[in-house]
Length: 207
Image (cartoon, rainbow, N blue to C red; front, top):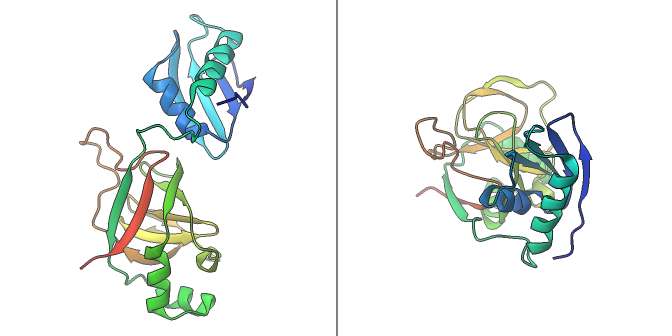
């Protein structure tokens, strides 16, 4: 795959990489790190790569990243990506509001939510929280005017163009439509996060 990276310094020991393939590039660098590599943290369209400036330099890092990018498969989707199915009980406090706002019935909201295929764009906010792309346009909901002080762990939510699941109890302003018993974050598990960047996610009604 042709390299399409823009690599700039982000302090003495980090590089900011602009690329549409942040997640697969991060996986590739972790799998075959260059000397001095520390971590690769993908987000939407950007990758932060940290390194030891006593071991390597930004030009060397740029060269290594471009080599990794050029070696990515055409789909830019290494086999590390998986499909994870999350069972959901659709009884969230905002489910009725979402249905009314979308001009759908509650069963139609559930059908469209479970009928979509989502992808982990990046992790953030709290440990294990994933920002999922793929929300149907009719289910893209405005956030609450005032965030809840506590959202229960396992809450399945919609916020703007994103879908997500709260892995831990935390404040939040997304619309809650259901809950899952899947543990998205467990500090005693290796790895502690159930989902990782690039994974495909589907929701299904818990039977």
